Image (cartoon, rainbow over all chains, first blue to last red; front, side, top):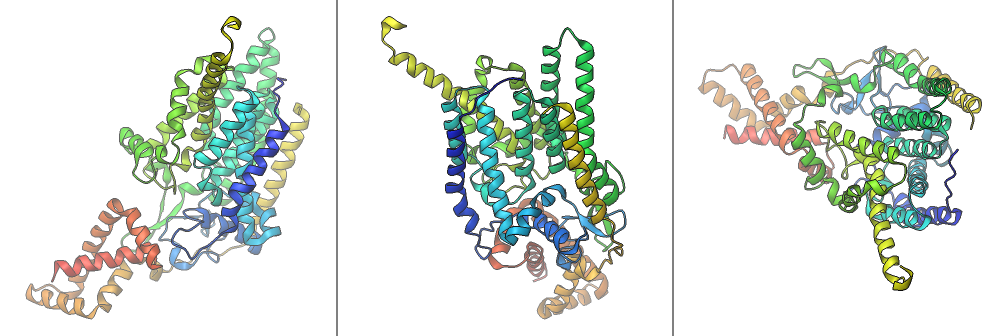
Length: 382
Length: 124
């Protein structure tokens, strides 16, 4: 197991920072204002929680006003032909304890909890590459200078999945591969697209295990098999829910979206047919769209991009390669997506990319700090 | 955590979640009864046109002049509105959504009204 030390005082500071900065947003919920705090998909997720807790089912027809049933493309048709959630159900399930204790205030409190966890695990991941202080400063800068801040008062599965994959990644970097695999699988439960993003992490883990046990191929294969068993067991609730709700273990709500034809007949749509946007057009929108371009909400990415140029100086090169591969895959995937602007800020779909970019931002910070320290040293010591 | 501890934890999580999912999907729920009146197009558009007396008169007059049966002409108008609607959704999705929020109406209702206004302009 690889020992990576973190500073408990720093973690306490990050939690305090999170509470002080984000809590005012969370408690100032105002649905009457022009800016809806719970915009986009948030409301649909909240209704799933209410359906589970109040009705004990996943029939959404009595939770959603009838005028929204087929007009919004936000519900799916179950295999038993009732209106089921289009969105994943594991994020709402994770919210249930908070909802039971705090009722509607449970949504922002759960979101606040997730936001703080993102910062804590970002800090822990950064500690794998840099000293405590660089990790702390980068975390705090990202806490206020990236989309974490505006999304601290939203309620979306993106943040839940992000927390789980960051925990998985953190354990992976500390060579706790079994626990890492468990959390990576849980991130897929939270958001199905995370199945793609865990592939580079799985490759990094596979490489690390191989590197450690080069001389014992049997041990390597045994560990791979054990990880696969944990992964499949952890993923099984998703396969089961797909089967029971939508009729196939690989069929999700996103493939059975309820809509209607112009002559008024029900028809089912699938998001899988929404990946046809020209790549460069999509990339341009992702980065530079007037309202939702990633750069406008995350200026830090510019510095992070400079940090990428110096990635060879970082420790754990295989981990760095996996980060870069995730970032590349996310840009390719979402540039092709027709609904890439279905986000309040730029861009929730690339939350993971933005968080991973913190490593490259910290890289620049580290270079500057080292340069500065060297300059301050008396010349005869150099 | 070692393999067996993690295996135990993953089994515990999976079985708990699976049990909950089986419970949530075990209810006998009747199939969704689709109510056409809630489809905003084309039914709502037709109602909007019929309820707008000045537009309705204009359309009837235009139909008479060009020997088009009213119901047939109405379908043409709805078709025109739906084409406008598709254009608006493609080019002005976010601005219409923001405007609708300001007026506290649904985006669909707002866009439908835009389509009707466009129809009025066409047959003015």
